[in-house]
Length: 302
Image (cartoon, rainbow, N blue to C red; front, side, top):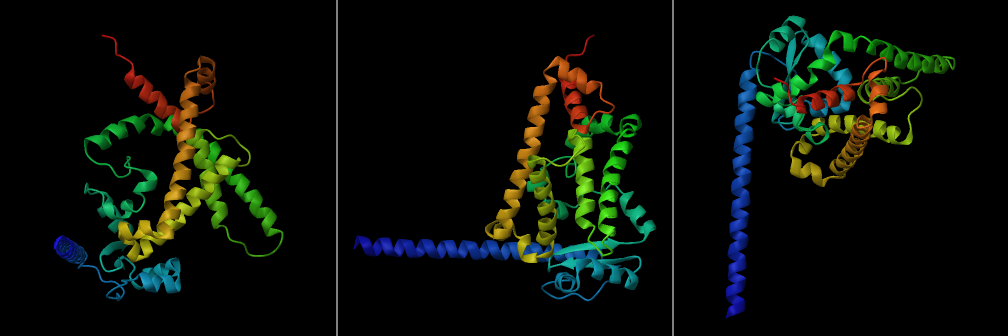
């Protein structure tokens, strides 16, 4: 008798669980449909290329190449057009400067959709914040964007650019076409690491090389994450090999930045090292942030 009752209770539990999953799935679908209707209504004044009912424009972009396809659409729709990635994620691609000015001059909250894909990488920082917390973080960054602080960085950008151009001159001697994408990315990251972390001139060390490859892979995987509409569901995405690779690359990037911050904080505890940092031709971004945090902790005299 007991096994029969136990079997019946398990069957009921399974039915309840199945019913709950179906109800939640149906509720989620309703929310997505309402969201799509709201997006479509907001962009109703702008025409666009024909969309597939399930893939939107994603399939067409993958088949043709996203950049080539978007360039062809700019000729067909010279001001702006709708762009759908899957059935529920829509954007308004703007090409006309006056249109862009009208949009960016507004004080609307940031759309969370594009940033949700990279939150595990960039964290919940200034880029995605709003309200009082945004103002608090912005206050910390204000000293870093003073003209006198930014001016010395021009020489840093020029140095990285010259190194890239020297590399291109060597490749050009072979009289063959070559891909500049990786070189430009390397130059941008080299400039970023010099201005942000105080990296010295010279090649990338093992740790910095790992960081470069992690950032490159994260950039590529974010684009894939955005274009594959099935990956827009986090539960599905984190179960895929693609999602697990993304998390591993995030860990490499976070480990590098955490280590650089720990080392810099330790260096700032030493008076000689702190004087050496202050006497440099320019302070890097991390020095300015850490210096601002220290000054804010110090008690003010009355």
